[in-house]
Image 1 (tube, rainbow, N blue to C red):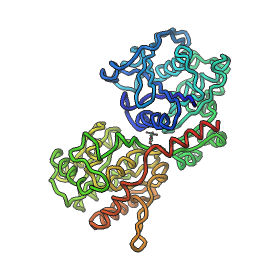
Image 2: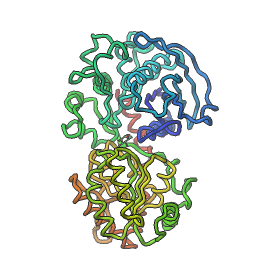
Image 3: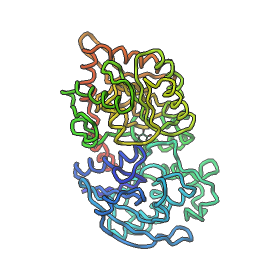
Image 4: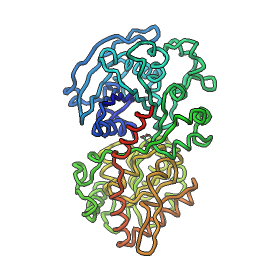
Length: 476
Ligand code: GLC
């Protein structure tokens, strides 16, 4: 049986701030279902709830050496859905107000990565593949090659590094190479990118395979417009780069059984979805009307999610049309300000909730008719899949995983093709035009019913991806 260790900074339902947490919390179970021995290791943040802590077992206590420091490390574990989750316990590093954003994030995740490698010998678990995710886990791949390879048990461990988002690379000043990361000057070249330490670059160079979360994004990041500076390094390592489209957790995201939505439904009973719209409209103080289409935006409010083209057109769109708009998410102040103003100008049409709230997100997915996701870049994107599962029509820009998962709607006689509305150019005008086309379709009851039925039946589960990952592990 293949032994895989997932290393990453978050996993649902223990601690998560975004898509990485979704993937770390659901792909392992899908791999386990296919017969792999999958374990996951993540930090034990202060945010991990008592109900989970109560289920944890103590596995080991030891010290981790990081440069001149000798640091406490406890490893706890619990089993869920056929997967063993290990938690790295160190309150000094992980009992903070937020998962990320501390001045010493570099040190925190260097400690985490070193603790992972140390833990293997204390757990007597040597995986066939160490599978690290995003910059926070990048050093685990680097340490494996630089500091641990000489030990017999570590000699044959292969490594995969998955890029969930190239926007965040883990860049630091060289002053801390020895003092924080505990690496000697002989590793300067490996760690260097443009005169700075770049953890993602070092992991790309070190790993046996580099993967990313959609085939299209794997191509895109090899080009200067998407590579965020790393496109050259990725082109050099193209032979080991692949893209596998994420899935979503079909148990957690299931409108037929979701405990947090007011009225449950599936593709056969999809007319019931409208009851969720009425409930949300009342809860948010919007006029409760079946016949007004509700558009939703659920995202971090940052530029690469397409916020600048949305803010370019939304006030015109909302002003001109009989629509409602619900926005959930927080982020850059300028965008928060824009939406607050929009809601103030159109109190009967717009409701804005500046926060991250997973249950509320599901209520919005269940309520809305159109889901807007015009990202400038999108490694995979999960929201368009969740929206589809909940019967909302996605309107997306053709980039990354959005391109791979949503195909534009068109009619051929009685037949309909596609599962959403898409556009290519990054412009407010194109977004505007596609939203209007989607609204027109929505007004045609018969067509709407058929398209939503098709959308809800599109398979975004993990089954296909899990098999692709296993094939990838076999090919190392
Ligand atoms: C990141 C990406 C998102 C992707 C997710 C999971 O959050 O921005 O596109 O779906 O990781 O891989």
